[in-house]
Each structure stands twice: as structure tokens, then as C-alpha cells.
Image (cartoon, rainbow, N blue to C red; front, side):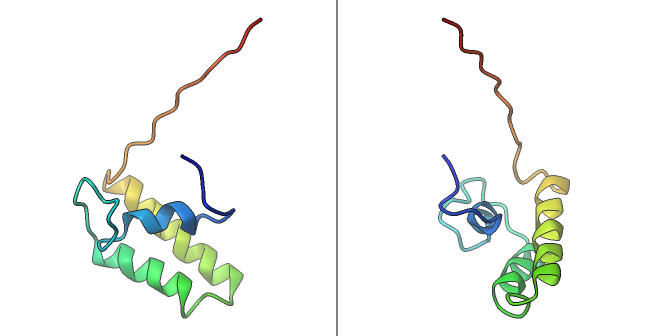
Length: 77
């Protein structure tokens, strides 16, 4: 699974409370507000928008809403 477009919101939007992809049923109003703010109030200010997105990302990790997995691969011939 990859991003639909080159922006962090492509992944972060998946974890809002109303998202159909929140299979763990995690929800956080502060997270939802940060995502909404990044798409409305702060949409035209890159610095503020980035701050909203990084704070939202921190919430995901701090509350263990997601567990990021790393699976290295090696190709040999």
C-alpha cells in the first residue's frame, strides 16, 4: 500500500475517527481537529500545516494507535 499522492495527509487521513479504515476503532478528537485544521484553517500556511501534521503523527505513535512495521528485503541473483 502506498500513498495516493505525495503528502503526509494521504496516510494520516486514514486514522481519523470517521475513516472506514480505522479497523482498531481508535479515535481521538484532538487528532481529528489537527487533521481538519491542516485541511482548512492552516491549508495555505505550509509551516502551520506541517506542525499540525507532525503533532497528529506524534499522537498516533504516543497512543499506539498504529504499530509501524519494518520488513527489510534483499534481492540476490
